[in-house]
Length: 184
Image 1 (cartoon, rainbow, N blue to C red):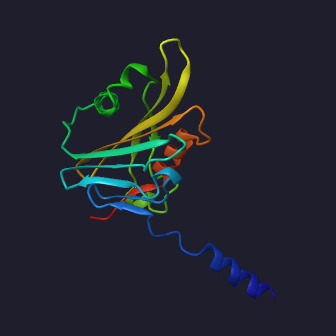
Image 2: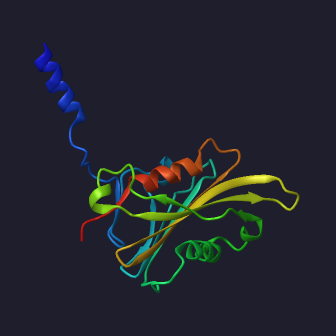
Image 3: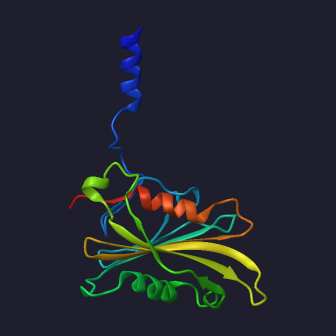
């Protein structure tokens, strides 16, 4: 009885190296998990120079976008400043006046990925933000991050209305922790 229990336990543990749920060939990153709203993503034009994916239209108002560009940043580029500037250049101009940004912080990418040793994203600047009206009413919240790997700069963000059941910040954190670089 003990032997069969051990065999079953080993079978349940299995290999940590699972197939990704989504891969972006350029910039060479894989997702170990995607939020329901982003699974499957709507792919824009994906080339080796630039691309965009987004969440499909949904009734909850949750919105994810990932942009990437092939670019070599100068060695002295402040990546947290890049995140702030690029986010402000990407977000809808209609929404921009309502965005109240927090200060960028840093998190470890790929932390929960089985490939964290061989394909870690490294340190990732992240920034929370809120969407407020002129009278100070909180309408929504979001989070954005920047990833720099394989000669690419990636901006990934999610926004959710306050009425949503989705914890957009926790979901984006989970996706970052399960993302990793593909082998070249």
